[in-house]
Image 1 (spheres, rainbow, N blue to C red):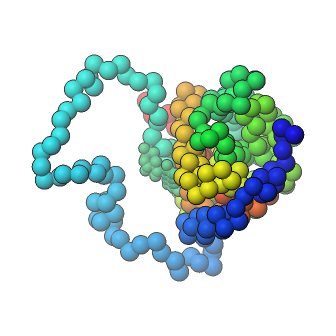
Image 2: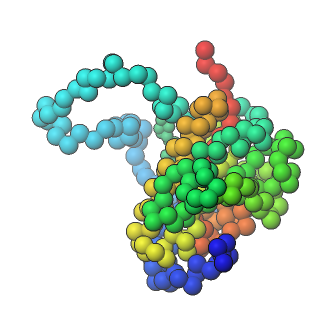
Image 3: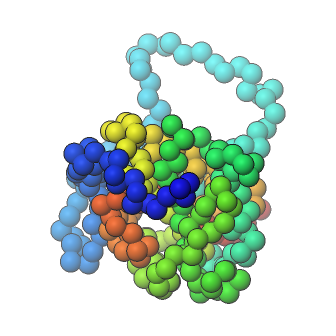
Length: 268
Ligand SMILES: Cc1cc2nc3c(=O)[nH]c(=O)nc-3n(C[C@H](O)[C@H](O)[C@H](O)COP(=O)(O)O)c2cc1C
């Protein structure tokens, strides 16, 4: 049985590890809901202090001049591997289905026989599942028009989620917080399936899964740039609302991050 059903992992999961990781993870949850507007705050910092505290590099000895220049930078070839800055405002536009395929291409297995993928995974667990939702109704080229796609990186196929795809519901889940980012075309949702993540390395699995999400989204950022697409990562959503639109159990599937993809104005 090579393609095991996903709940088979539950047999090998230590319930107490799962409970503790779930408790910790839930402390990082945001609840975006009208009823809580103006009732909850994250901090009481003013703009001045926020500006002072963010965007910094951490100098360990700020009062001692213990730095040295990176002299060879001028001679270094301009690297093609630099990502673009995050998109501030997406224009309303659909993506061709072929562009979706190109975008996720770097994540796929290179060799059909190998379990390996375009990104590394601690212990070859591959606990991160990638879901792709169109945020426009203009997606007639999609297979199973309008379905949410679940990436199968080894077989290089998309599984069609058996849930209703209602663009407005998806948007209200992933864009629940007040925002001014325009209209992204796609939401890629990086979800960790915890039974697959914790059975082998226990608590340390959680750490490795987060790093795996980072390496996946960086590949997507670089590929998006090469395709002329714009991106913005997003964490301002409520996990349970995102799981609900994907039809996933929020105690087992943790949506770690959303990646918006679309187009923006060209700056000449
Ligand atoms: C994991 C992650 C989550 C993020 N979540 C949000 C978010 O919820 N809202 C937002 O406006 N930007 C979000 N960002 C974008 C950051 O604000 C942005 O990367 C940072 O300001 C640096 O700017 P740059 O990406 O243009 O270099 C997120 C970035 C990361 C890596």
